[in-house]
Length: 130
Length: 379
Image (tube, chains in turn blue, red):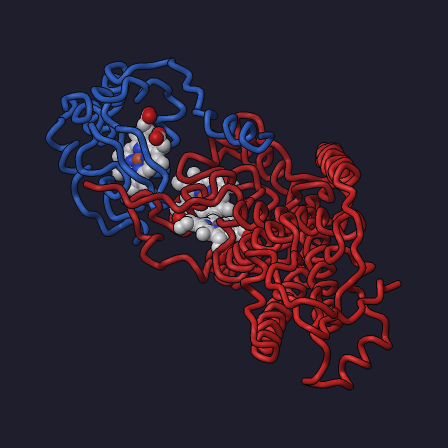
């Protein structure tokens, strides 16, 4: 019994999102920094492509987020990942720090470098359009 | 202290009552519970532990009741009737195949009965000790340490093997004696009756103290339940730590389940937390102050601070780059019974996804009571 309770608290530990921003605000912010309008097509291409600059186990964003980001994905560890597209999951892109942390990590894992402001704007613009 | 049986003289009748109703129910219920306990213990994997505990407890309870009946039951149920003296044993052996026919247990059969009863009690004791030490469950959980787990488990297993051996001898003895005296001894254990022949050794009748037996047995049952419950409530020393505040779940359980600090030694956590940029092929780096906070919590509650079976299993993990537990010998040994294909199932996916099969993985317990391999989902 005691163990089940501990387990339940652990399972319910969802990240607390700051809710300090929105997908639209982020697109504007990133495209302003890049100095060009966001392109959903470029975002889609980057997201779907297979890259070779990053870590060998994670050649593409789709490795974990699946090729349809309105549906859930799965990390290499088996843990399910909620849909990445804000259309399917309104929690997405509502916490600046969280977004920055995961762009930082995932771009590094997949591309072997940080994503540029332009690329971030493109990707969010594509995800919003789904 | 044997009630000396005397040779029977008179009419041959084939309805002499030997095994009373309690003895017969006891005997066959014991056969069923012991077979289930042996099968679940030796043949099935750890996830069958519930069946094992239920059948094992039933066997012990039956034996306790049988012991009470041995002092209160009718003639042939009494220990005083059948426990042989050394002299009776040697006379019996000397007589060889020509020994007189005993209506109750013959001296060798009686020794077997005593050995079986004693061994089942020993299995109960070592079983409860193994449960308390290894699995930190039950009445002895608070008083035994996890490090004694392997010892008790081995003693319990050894007793199990001896019991298997005795059962083979017992069945063999029944077959040989049935042949010798041209009767079906196992059938008597169903009908309760034996044919009475001239020259048989018949014991003087003894009265049954039914009320006393019922009072004693219920008293023992109530006493055992109260004691076991009371002892099982005692707080454990050094159990695995409870979940860390939000931060651990946020930063370390996004890509996988929250691995419990007690599953690795402090040195292993330090090594892992010092190289998060290259974390099992991914970048898991953290802001410095979060990294320090998480590393401190992990090392503070690492394996050496915890008294549990998993903490012991991996307490001396040594590595130069962080290893996943499924790459350790201890893990492979524990999972030999698991089908390779299970790990590739979509809803398991990785051996490191412990929580897919161990519902309590994030508590650090990995109790066999909580193991269940999920079914492959249809698509």
